[in-house]
Length: 86
Image 1: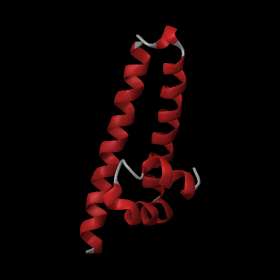
Image 2 (image 1 turned 90 degrees about the vertical axis):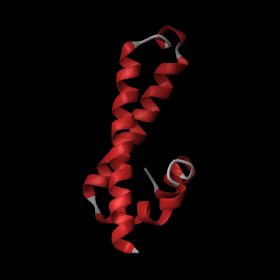
Image 3 (image 1 turned 180 degrees about the vertical axis):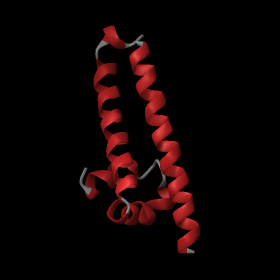
């Protein structure tokens, strides 16, 4: 995901960490992978939810939980990194 797209998509998710996100995406391969995985899950969930047949689907719920776990781990890394940069 390009940084420009990243800013549009995630500016509301962690607005206080905008600069830290950019730095971690460049310097931390694990964070960058999580970021890409989160974006891919978001896209997959959106596509599945567009089909009414999938609205009540346990697979979507599993994907949402996985996406949330990634987001939580990203937040932990952001908090740790933010403390180190102050």
